[in-house]
Length: 215
Image 1 (tube, rainbow, N blue to C red):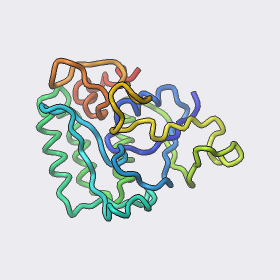
Image 2: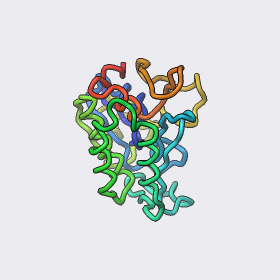
Image 3: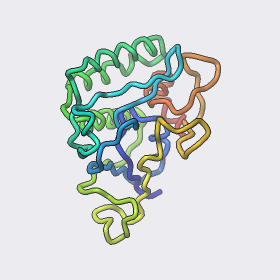
């Protein structure tokens, strides 16, 4: 399978990791402009009330879409870390593997990286280790235009698979290429399986066996 080019999500959806199965490498788009209402600063978790988004606030949100994603700053004037962590504790505190991963996640939050990209990258490396996905991760050095010819791909692989914006929290159920979350697994709430959630949901429920549910 060719290398995959993707945006860098916050607590990526399960389908993000499913699309990496068998990939030679992962290239992260570091020079696109930030886009609102995407997984770049949002994830979906499962609570007693159903799906709930967790969103990382960014500085100067009205102008943020003119800022390169790798330069976008997190707004720590809002107490969002406390809110996210309490929500995760409430939703998953009783799950089989919450305590197994809690310290690793909390340590990353406590570092308070200035940039959204750096925060997401730290979480990504943690999840790749947890899922035993061993593939090199690169960050683009310039923007890779979707319609680029092979002559403009360098230093990217010529067979790069462009998966940017294949996954979106705004898509309707049953539509779009991201309507998958691998194999269903037992979840904390509800009788019916809820797809399209953050990898956190799978890890907290399945722990070290989570990688086997991606396909």
